[in-house]
Image (cartoon, rainbow, N blue to C red; front, side):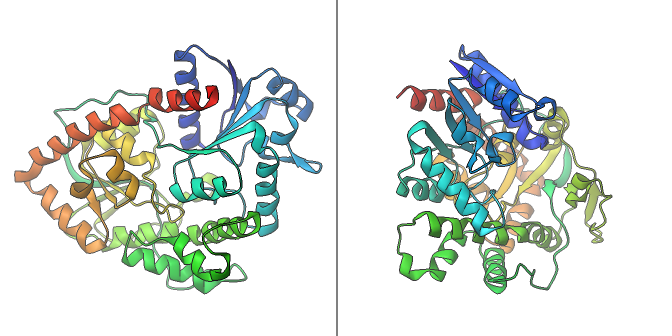
Length: 390
């Protein structure tokens, strides 16, 4: 079969796309790869994708998700569509009407599309609209095998690779429901198992448990706007850590817009470092750090994101906020998960102790084995191909 994919300007998304291309090629399929900056017209893109059996849409900023006239490009091309939601559905728009138009577009092509979501609540919501949707997990995006590295944790620091900024006390202004978004953020800060989808459901008790296109669109908007507090959430966690030194790679995402990072941390235990994207650099940090941190963005309630999988693939040890999917994928979930900042501090103290270095290695070895069996590129591609063929 011929699969169409579009490269992404987002370097993290692009790693996922490159791994998919490699996996599909290894399975004997051909990939038609589009570079958005080189496409001169909609007609050119249409003609390229017309040659494909399936087109894989991996994010909402790609050309396929653009509206052309009264419909989206994914509605207009003859190829069937695979939507791979490695973010939650919240990454569509901030505007309710734009979200509703997109959701209605997805419903209109439900007979020629398949969706895969890592967030269980998103799978249920799409299925309630009659859209074919399957659960999937993130995969190893570093392009390296799952191997135990005996040199793990040579650098006795805690590392976080990602965006985080010092928290603010005020409520962000979006125009409506501002205090509800803030309350969701505060609740997650207190308990990392707190569900934002449950928060939204409480605002629409008359909707019940079944969502239509309008109520799903409202939920997507709720999650998108609440998710703006993620960087503050992470910053607050980093500032609250005790008895450790933290290397922060990324921090303020202003660099993504060509602006020098200005919202840096002044706490003495946090070292602000430049963002890293090169696979080898990322893998080396994961591998060398005694402890790596994951602080999942607010858009997710149950999903375990690729930062955890990539860290284990590099032979690194990670502590992560407690998510249901982690328990499904690893027997070590309770040993590495935290629900509160206090629990995180306790586990950092425990695992930084020299006497527990071997315990870290044992956990990495066990999780490497489990993730290799469940979260490889090959497994992800095989699941996609199985559902496509079915």
